[in-house]
Image (cartoon, rainbow, N blue to C red):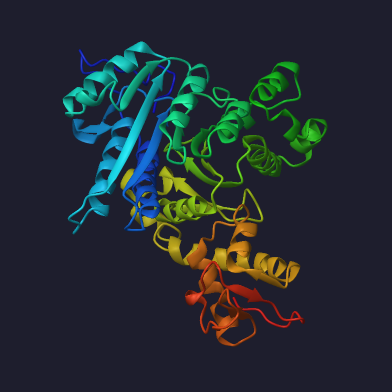
Length: 428
């Protein structure tokens, strides 16, 4: 993944590579973990012989970075290829008949120098033989390359499963019309999108040029333009939170996806600009898996997207980056405990509303209805329901209405939850 400035220059001949930042390494870890989980979840049925998956990296960069001490750190193309091969090995452990993960991988970048460097990096890692077989390199603007890539994904068949990695150079490089086209055209598409929210908000003003830039990406109607000046004047800090909420809602609507989770990433520095790493999908299971990965890599939280808890990574709170362990004993070392309290508070407000809005529903329906409003995954919600289920304040039965659950962590997605007629319980 690349950024369009002088810092990000690739040249294989001179061995010139950008230096990888800690916040980018966290983003790469999320990609690696998600791809490995993706393969294992879809292949959890041991009888499935083959998975076909298309990976599209729309801003792929040159494939290699310099890490601390001059060590090589590979970019998202190599991370994707290696993660899938590792996941394939895991699903074939102790099997005599191996199962196959068949992929086609499209790596696109607008700079020919980046594509040339990536080609050389692939060759250096014994992956050069895959070029033009199942790895396709293309020097192009991503939106121009998208129609042809979409056709090839559809021709690949087997459910049209595709993961798009869109680490765009600027927030305007991928209009949401293109993202909506992906979801409209490809049955099982998912997108990991970098959205430079602070860069957008910093220069936000009700001026023609500014409105045009927001209109070009398809989010203009979600900004409260008429109120912007008053908000800036009267709510000097809170106005940015309000705009973030408007943008997050607008992104979900304009993307055409059913499910979204946002992971904020703050680079190291005195005045860093936070960006969002957004996961968009039409499948609930994909959303739940990504949330569990976000918890794994998060080290900070906020309520900027209130009322939902907002989890992310702040390099300024990473003791491995700052070397200031003693100054961060409060939240850095008690992140799990503090966030547990926050998520319980969030669920104590959200769960009763969802349960009493529909007195009888499946656990799956409950999770679907909350997915875009909480960072709680299934396991957290099950634990939150445990006391009410154990005390029989909340009735949970299997899909046939026969077996009754006695504890929260035994609940299955198909189970039926029956809320009492009176709002007399709660469980957190």
